[in-house]
Picture 1 (cartoon, rainbow, N blue to C red):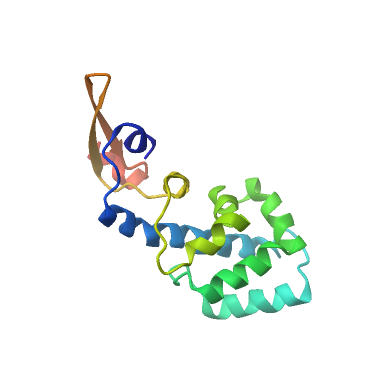
Picture 2: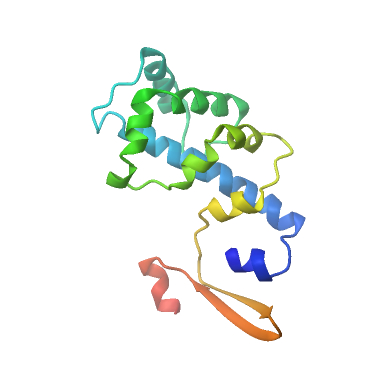
Length: 160
């Protein structure tokens, strides 16, 4: 992604549109991971946060859309001390650091906007799973480079 931003052709409108659900999914999946670990680490969210967490647990899945309502619930929970304490222990469980970027006050509101278009930083922060082998060509100072992005999952290695 960095090479494409620095040396490749600009992202097309179609590519940007295709990245919207990726960003949304990153936020929803990773916020759910944080919330799932609050009890595991023995943190005590406020009563209001506990009620919101229960409502989310009953209705939100990793594939749920990032609606205004869900954004507001996440924003409220993100400010809770118990949730922040769990976020502070993120090195003990697998969650993307980019959640902190996406949940920042200056970012979270625009993510759920109906007209949301990912910025370059949004794209860099997003985790997009590579499947198969993706080839990109770049010209830097008159020299042609070809880069191959290979899937890092174990089941993708046979394609290398």
